[in-house]
Length: 404
Image (cartoon, rainbow, N blue to C red):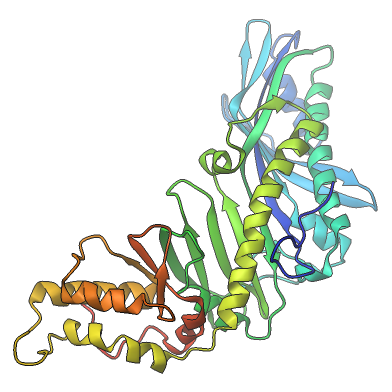
């Protein structure tokens, strides 16, 4: 399989890798004999995969390990909902298997366990530009062998059983790119204020770093409320990550166009993961280009504030000439616009009637070369890429009070 690398306008050397993939599965076995569920549990316990003391009807949670080429071990977390039926047992559709695919890369490149991300996790290895397509192929090999190993493990605990049906489908996954960058924190913090093209909703937060006493910014943008999430954050010092997250089946459906199920097995799992990798990987490359463009911006906070002076005057209810004094409602609208521009780079025009002073001031900012550009629809404005690097100088301290 060919990995997603630079295409179209993306820079040479861009590559996308998996963070994780989560599958849903179901299968039914006949001829498992009496107490088939308990026999499965006992077999998993005897192999050291499951802890004793499983409560009746409780899901079975354990890890599966598969060996890959090059003496690499791939692991996955499995949750099976198992119940007995008249002639066997069924593993119901609430069951999942989640693959830890970054661990494959860490082993391939001998990343020590002491290397921990700023978020306290080990789901990273090295700058993605230093990885190769063979690393992506190893991740797909891990997916195939983990699913096959899981099926073989179940059937080995139920000798003589016969599988009469079985299916697997995608329930979630993430692809990512880690970019080596000298001004990594500034680039990510600036990107918090500049939504990628097509964004309708956004949210940001700073999380406490596990190393040192600092806080790291992270941003989330999405075009659909239940769709894929575009993310960016500082994974490690000097290593910003762009990521496309599909946390549930609705987000997967956005890419595949169908709620696809295939026969339970490693080959089918790879087929599903490939569909996600291609579509989400292209968006991840676009996000990477977005961060680069923001980092090249060059505009300063002083330049941005100067352009915002007309809206600031309305927010402060400063009289204009001899005939206009902004009303309280106009001041509230102006503050909402300023808060949108300076907090997450998004302005929703709904409620701003054409011909009002606030709407006229916003429209002036949308002129060619101005700080606002059209977003996902004519009713949404976004901060222009070239103004993104004004954000790190902002630090959330406004030179005027914003209500609400």
